[in-house]
Length: 324
View 1 (cartoon, helix red, strand yellow):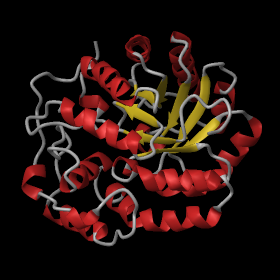
View 2 (spheres, helix red, strand yellow):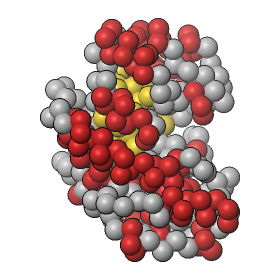
View 3 (cartoon, helix red, strand yellow):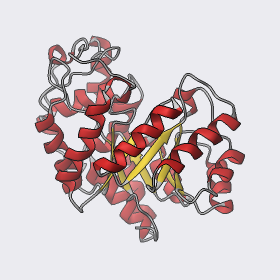
View 4 (cartoon, one colour):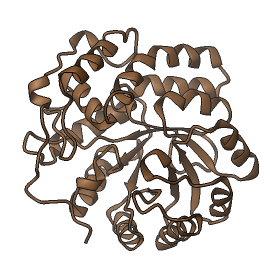
């Protein structure tokens, strides 16, 4: 692991397992977190966008920290993902997450609000000021509508608690420049970009596909750490059809739950509305991609049994997500 890294290197953007009614399946949460850390993950990001944060209640978000922390123990860091597109709410959740035992916070670019760079700077700094936890900035213009510009990132790097960036822009030239100009740790936020970013100096990844196959990502990171690009590239190629299956057809949360359920790793593929399970043509292309996955350590796709009926539609939970 990189020196002075409080987050880990193979971080999983955790899905939130649910039952058919859309309630959090806590037994599945425990089993899934144990599966991930037992197979190479050293960081778990709970209640992030992949975890359906916008439809989780605050109580559920905090319980995810507590349950994941109890299961992971000292094997992995537990990071609160999100936490909100409202600064006051994000500050509150960061404080509550610290009290619940989180090891770090990952703060996403406020989505829909589309603030200016000055607004982003204030938002991130105020969240970072709220606790003593190390913080990751999540830069994802495709969902947030605005980028965190390089100049803003370099200014944020001066904050003692802001130590890392999750990059979903995929601008390798910018990544290189920020790495040259700051001490920030960089994490690939796009599964297909994990190896390219690691190759130019990134610390690790925060991956969705890693919910399904954490061990191959561990192989890639360990190979890069020892300078073995050939091994890392070979594993990257083996992962390509699985990353394509999870990340290119429908929202990654939906496809990942569909695949995990087909592998028998979670009890239900259910998601909360407005997300819905894959329709027939979407399920078919996912299954066709999965059929091309061969030779990945730690996961047996010969037992893949997708259930389109179980995944159909979306659930309305008994308690709606709430800000405060």
